[in-house]
Amino acid sequence: MGGERVGHGRGAPVRTVACAVGGVVLLAGCASMPDSGDLRGVESTPRKDPQVRVFAMPPSEDATPPQIVQGFLEALTSDDPDYRTARQYLTPKAAKSWRPELSTTVLSEGPGAYADSPVREDADSLTYTLTGTKVATVDAQQSYAPATGSYDKPVRLTKDPKNDQWRIDAVPQGVVMGKSDFQRNYMSVNKYYFASNTEGADAGALPSAVADPVYVRSHVDPTTQMVRSLLAGPTAWLDPVVRSSFPAGTELRKGTGSLTVDDRGRLSVPLNGGVAEAGAEQCEEMAAQLLFTLRNLSPVVEEVELRAGGEQLCALAQDEAETVAVRSTLDRPEHLYFVDEEQRLVRIAADSSDMEPEPVPGALGEGGRTLRSVAVARDERTAAGVSADGTSLYVSALVASGSLGEPVLRSRGKREQDRLSAPSWDAQGDLWVADRDPGNPRLYLLVGGAEEPLPVRTPGLDGRVQAVRVAADGVRIALVVEEDDRRSLMIGRIERSGPGGGTDGRPAVTVRELRSATPELEQVTAMSWTGESRLVVVGREQGGVEQMKYVEVDGSIPDVPPPAALTGVKDVTAAADEQTPLVAYSVDGIVRLPSGAQWQKVTEGTAPVYPG
Image 1 (tube, rainbow, N blue to C red):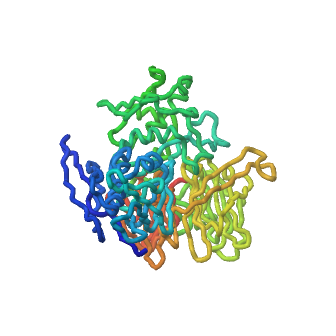
Image 2 (image 1 turned 90 degrees about the vertical axis):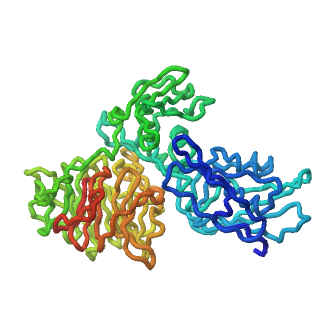
Image 3 (image 1 turned 90 degrees about the horizontal axis):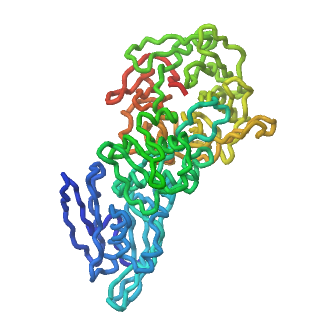
C-alpha cells in the first residue's frame, strides 16, 4: 500500500484517562495528534487497576483524515457505554447503520491504517485499509473464539462540502482493537444454565448448574450486561445441552436502565410480563441462575429479588441458591487417589498434611491386579482401573468385600501406548475411556460403569483420542487428540438420546462440535478440569519448552498467574473446588501445589487423580 500510514497499535492519545479516587474524577490529560506521518503508539492503560477509566475525545473541527481514522480507533477502546464518541467520527448515515455490538475482533497489536492513495488537498473522499493479525473474535452472543489469519478491512472517508469536515461514511461492523486493549476493556464472566442432558439422573435430584463463559466490557455496568446476557439465553455452542428457567422472551422491563445493588447487597430485577405466571420453584431457579452469574462481580450481590408487573415474584439469598441447584465448585473431594509403587490403588486425605497413603478398600487396593491408571467416581464409592499393560479395564466398588471380576473392556492394541487411556467418571456415574488401538480407535461410555461399552459418536473428529476428562457438569468433555505429530486439547459437547436412539436400540451418545482450547500448543501431554470452565494443561509450543498453564474452555487465557514451574510433568489433576491443591506426577514423584506455596513432594507413585 503506497499511501499514508495512520498508525499501528494505539496512536497519539486522543483520549482522557479518568481515575475515580474517593469520588473525585482525576483527568490524566490529553495531547494533540499529528496530521500526517507515522503515529507513535502510547502505553496501554494499566489493566490491573479497576478504577481506571478511559474516555475518547471527539474530533476537532479541523481534524485531518489521519486524525479521524486514528481517533475513531481510539474511541473503540474507550469506556463510553454506547460508543457515542466513536459515532461522532462517522457521518450521520454511517453512525445510524454501524452496530458495534455485532462482534469484537482482537488483533495481536492495535490495527494499522493505511491510505490507499496519497491524500490530495482537493480530494473529497479517501479510503483507508485497517490491517492486523487476528488473535480472537467475540461474537454477538459475547462468545470468545481463537482466530488466525490477517485482518484487512476498508474504511471510507468523505468531506462534507458544507463545513469541509472529514467523517467516516463506510466502516466495518463491530469493533476492532489490539490484544492489550481487549484485556483492559473486557473480562470473562460465567453465566449459568441447567444441564438438560439428565438421562439416567436420580428422580428428584437437584439440577446441575453449567457455566457458559462470555466476555463483557469490564467498565460498562457489567452487572446489567450480565443480566441481559443471561436472559438472552445460552451461547449457540452450549444451547443444545442446557436449559434456562426463564421463559422464552423474558427481558428486563421496558425502560429499565442500570441495575443497582443496594447497601444491603440486594439486587431488584424488574422483568417483563412473561414471567408473571412462574411458580415458586421456577422463580427460585431463575433467581439461582442470577446469583450464580453475578457472584463474582462487584459490588457483591447477596440477594436477588425478581419482580414483574410491579410485584415481587420471589427473592433468594446466596446461601439459599445452593439448595436450588448443584454447582461443581462446591464439591470438595475427600481423598486424592494414585497408584503406588506396588501398582495398587491407594489414597490420602485431600486436605491433610498426612502423606502416608492407605490402600483403598476392595479389590483394586489389594494388589491382585497391577494398575497403570485409575479413576474414582465422584461419590467416591466406585473406582475403575486400567491394567499395567493397558489391555483391560476393571471396575470395582470401594468396599472391603468388593470383588474385581472380569474386565469390562479390553483393547487389542499391539503396543502399550496404543491401548486404553486413563478412564474418567461423569456426574451421572457413567464411565468414559478411549481405546487408542490404531486399527479401531474408539471413545467408549459404560453406563453406570457396568453395562456393555457403548461406542460414542464423534463426528468431525480427526485423529485418535489419547486422553479423556469429563467436566463435573456432565455436558462437556475434554479430549487430547493426536493427529500426525500434533496433540491438541479439544472441548466437545456431550449429547445423549433416550433409549432406542442408537442403531442397536440402546441410547445414542455423541460428542459434537469439538473445538480447540489450546491452538498455540503443539504437544499437549496432560490436562485436567479445574473450576467450572477452566482447565490446567501441560504442553509446549512449537520449538518451545514444556509449560503448565490455565486455559478457559473457549480457548481464552484467564487473567490469573500460571502454576509454578515444574519439570517433567507426566500427569496432572485438579478438583472443581479451586481451593483443593493442584497435584502432578513428575520426575520427583507425586507433588502438590497448595495455594500460595511452592510444589511439595507428597510421595512416590504415579497416576494421581481426584474423583471424576
